[in-house]
Amino acid sequence: VDLESHGRPDHSGTDLSRTVGWLTALHPVRLPATGCSWTDVRSAGTGLGHALRRVKETLRAIPDRGVGYGILRHLDPAARLALDGRTPPQLGFNYLGRLATTADTDWSITGEQVPSRTAGASVRPGGHVLDINALTTDGPDGPRLSATVTWTDGRLTEAEARLLTDLWFAALDSLVLHARTRGSGGRTPSDLPLVRLTQQEVDHLEEAHPGLADVLPLTPLQEGLLFHALYAPDAPDAPDVYQAQCVLTLHGDLDRDALR
Image (cartoon, rainbow, N blue to C red; front, side, top):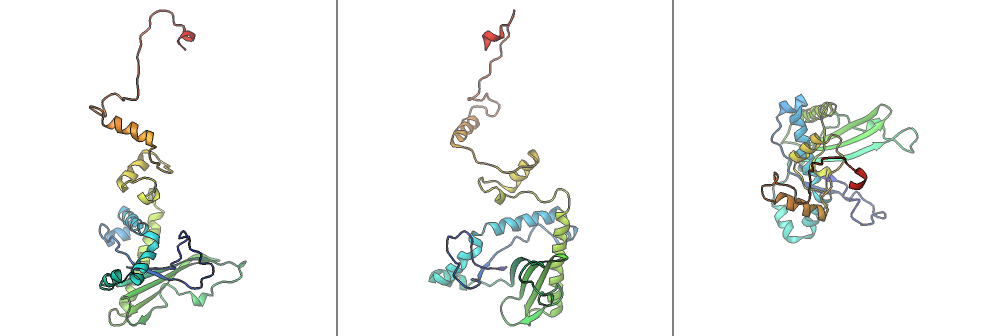
């Protein structure tokens, strides 16, 4: 999938306040498509939740939302030769974000300019086989997701493009249903950036500690304590080398103040 974004990273340190333009960033992403059948999608069960987590982790692993891909392609001659020789993705996706407009704002989007989920399809020559441009707008009736779909004539018919669009919205409906299910959601490794954990380890921690807020790395002293504890003979059954416990049996009158 070719993902498009505005190309203005918030944390780059570059002052773009006097720069006019969308500065489009376009980069390919290989999304995991295994482990979740269409039956899992329609049932909105755990299989769909696992797929959502995998996609989330894939996208979060991309540095600076893919801005560096365009830099390599256009400013590095050697990288450009390698990248131009690749097979381009057949699907393009651009999410324009969420716009909140109310009666108190200075401007609002007119209804006829916002494409619906069934209208706005058109034919385009060349480019991706299918392009989706999506936008969420807040209105009096709540948020509304709209999409404009374009496709390459000769690769897809209008009926096929509409079918793919309807399937996409059906998958979104299933994601909404899944999000309302008790036990859905949960943290993923990218939500805990200070440590390196697998998804299985994160799930185990959340099960053992409900309401888990964060996981912090060990301090250098704690790392030393853990190292000696793990490598002690017969660990973990051996006594902790940093913990001493004495059990005494006393007979007669006990002077607690003296023991203190």
